[in-house]
Amino acid sequence: MPNTPQHPRIDIQEVRTRSLIARETIAVLNQAMPHLGKLWHRINLALDDTPALVAELATVRRHHANLVAAARATLKAQYEGESEPLYYLCDELRAQGHLPPESWGRS
Image (cartoon, rainbow, N blue to C red; front, side, top):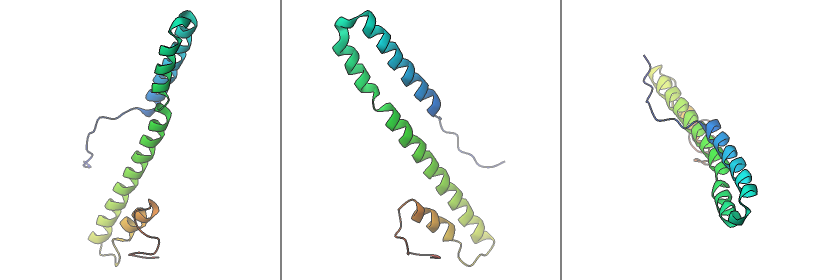
């Protein structure tokens, strides 16, 4: 059985859906209670960060998955006696901007 850590997962699509529902609800409430327009506007502003946070979370998850894959490939390469086992990790770190283009490992 593979060692797969269990972490609470945030469903990104569900977050997007809830944000849209909240905005639609605010629009309806704003029409029903226009005297609270400033309040509805403030709530809408609070929701403005949701799309950017969702996008950033998706990027972080992808980068993390890529680093884990590179680390596993590095360990396997070391186990199998490859001449440059760190190549996989260096390549991914370079791809994510954590290493200069021509440092360590293969060019």
